[in-house]
Image 1: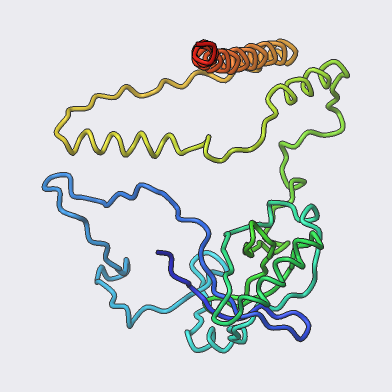
Image 2: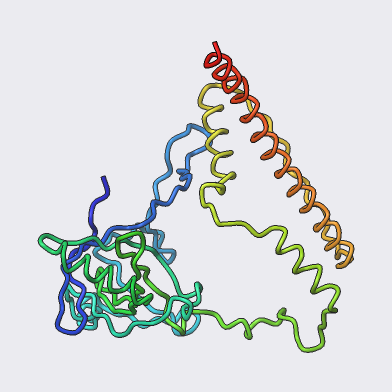
Length: 292
């Protein structure tokens, strides 16, 4: 059962809606511990001072910001606490925008906002009003002493909230040397074939189709080794990268996509014919029974 990680209220205008914050994702990662190869004992991480080789207790550790190689400005916990944003329990909506105006690069971590005690009606009113307006709320909230910019939107009858990256945290693509310049052109034929390829691969997004194949393979390996199986894996040899002929690659990709699409249609047609064939005898039997 998920537990709320923050409680407060959504505030816009003079309206306050009590809410509870829940994480919307549960990351599935395979975590390993560091072990001593000789005896399998877990390694301890110690904080050692390279100057004297002694272990440093937590009480003797301070925070330092490096301003140049080996030069640090020490900042105390009290100084940082004095700069903490004002701790409030409100999500202050500053404006409403169109969802299409927000580039996905700005999204960070997703959450759900659910109604607090006695807030079912105003919460439902806010969800319905935002859904009817087709707008996303941009707001600020302080979570764990850090001020967050967030986007709130209605999603299947509840409010979904995503923390956002600030503008100066998003890398501008113009900062890369590898981006194509004005000296690169594409032909109409290449563009038409690329569009056909996109159309042939277009489908409704179904998240259930996608899963972490690497994580599943790692867990399968762990399970087999835990059962005592001796596993021998061959490393995948990396092939040297080749610069393909663009038109040949587009044509081959388009042909493969058409074949896959045709195969999928044949499988669906076969399944429908099979279902019809199963129903056919029952219909003949029912008619014969009625005549008798």
